Length: 432
Ligand code: TYD
Ligand code: MG
Image (tube, rainbow, N blue to C red; front, side, top):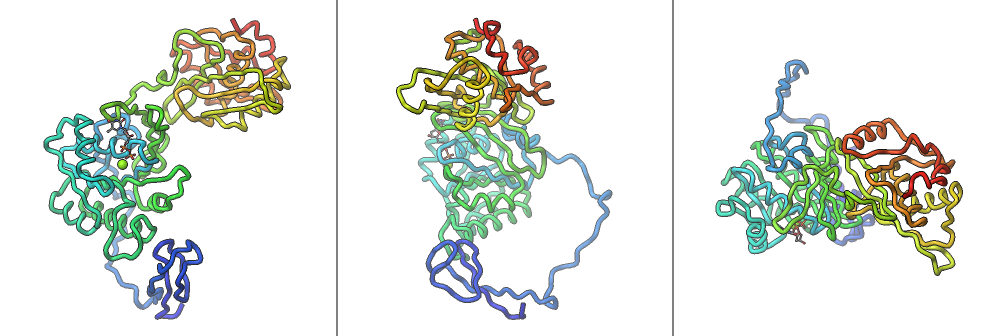
């Protein structure tokens, strides 16, 4: 590339062009091209002298960890927050990000909540509703311009800062609308640089739509230390905090919370949380088990089959994939004596949980058959196993561990008795 080459970059999507254009051919935005210098001459390389170190000389002392006030949250982070750690927390609107972070802020001795999305009255109202212990002493800031926000952070010198949300903060120095890629890039790199230099723990809230369409959070994932996602169904009370990236710990842990009248409350023992019928097994229900990180969670597969009035029977699945339900219905028709061709089948996981665990095949099939025969499964029985197209019930190493834990929780499993789904045909043995 020649020394003084100029290029034009779209400040909405970063598309590069050699000539100026009125409309970006990539993102179709108008008037977004800015001229930049793309020359990188070797003779121009500047910067200060860097020092090499031996890996063995680098201190590997355990990181200082700061609690969020929630054991569940700390576990997801790998033991707590780390000074100058930058955490991106994303999730659908209304899922509880602001609520959870306000509670985290309240647990810290010095913190600052920057609201760039809601008015101060709205934030104060939420704070009151949450009955925060240090409500009187909490300070909040309403700000949108990154420079003035950083100035205020410098003045107040807090340990934890929450920016809610990164899409609504902008930089005066960059063109483009707040939430556009150019703005998000500029704003987040300024905030992250500040946090790293001053040892501040920084939470960035990122909004995503149902389709995950906002490009911002994806781009941000490369810049931050930890990426968290708050998941759940707004109609249901439980929320799952999942870690997608963690530079300071493992990523396979999840935290389970419940949205209550007074904000988020942790569910410390979620293994039995999703079971609705703990004592008696109704018709059409079979407990199964899923594993999330180190956590074993017992769930309930619920099925309903009824005579169809349509030429093509209905297959409706919630929480599990509909395609899987269709495959399982075909397996039942092929390998057992139960016909489903004249029956609609509805299948869901109790509590609104979503799972793509293959080991849920067997509980799904048993729940469906239970509904077809109108008999319930024995109490205290759990099923798990992946069902192949040849009708075999398969379990893996993971399932063997699960079985041990189910037994510890007082449940029996019946996988040894039924290695083939066709054995379920003799379910006089199983159904009451
Ligand atoms: P919020 O934290 O504003 O979501 P987000 O920041 O992810 O958009 O939470 C919004 C929802 O949570 C809202 O529908 C009301 C509900 N909520 C409760 O159920 N209990 C509470 O104590 C609070 C503060 C909110
Ligand atoms: Mg919010």
